[in-house]
Length: 363
Image (cartoon, rainbow, N blue to C red; front, side, top):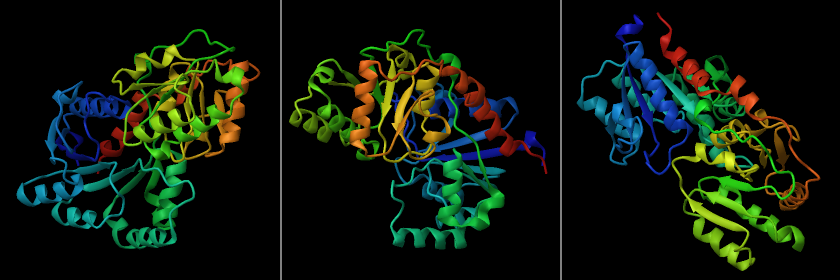
């Protein structure tokens, strides 16, 4: 197959929001640009349309907030298409819809797994359901991509080791040159930020509990800015009022320019209960801002404890409290330039190139 004759479809269950521009948005834009440079036409299927950033340059077909993969199957029924590849992001793996899509198109399907797993794993009923789906529907997917080694391992745990030969890891990356770098770090009374969607699984309630346990002296000096929005915000605000911590937490809302903000802080806090491979961690490190986070998902594939950040057990409020106390008092600190690791291993350019190689092979 001549690479210059290719047309691909990319299915993304990812709402396009001008107020939230993150690493995946930049990936989509640069991947589209890379394809165009090689005369590959890309049709993007999103829940909605937007023209912010470089989305105005993408050929977007919106599902009007219908399930994107189901919408795509109906689209293929109604329209003549000649895709070489169909790539999915933020879509359930090994779902029955993949069988229908494969009946409507001869394209190879590449499924990229961004989905975090629960801290204690799935319930037995769901484990069995996933294994059954792996048996019946994995054959319709040509390639499974995990965004971390953790994710790749979980794909095999979920759907079966028979997928090992067609499963690989491609790490997420960030656009490093656009991220402002912090030059000096405060080791006494450092500044902290959280950058997160506000939902319960992000563990910000644990951070609130940890701050409530701090000594009065430490509590009087620590301030944490929270960037993001989401359905759990009201519960977090209620908890902050209950603990009388209004002076310690400042909700900044969603920002589309976080890459310009990270460098204003000394540390990022991410007390998450479940994670796949966090782009905000990569962006923070690229800004030379160490990260305090949990031992879930692919976090330990990029954070080395006491080297470029600190790792603590998920939901361990006491451990987080002790870390905060030591960081504020300066008895624990990170001195290395955390940007170097990201430049070497987790650049967006490398991510785009690795994903492009999936479709650039000739037959």
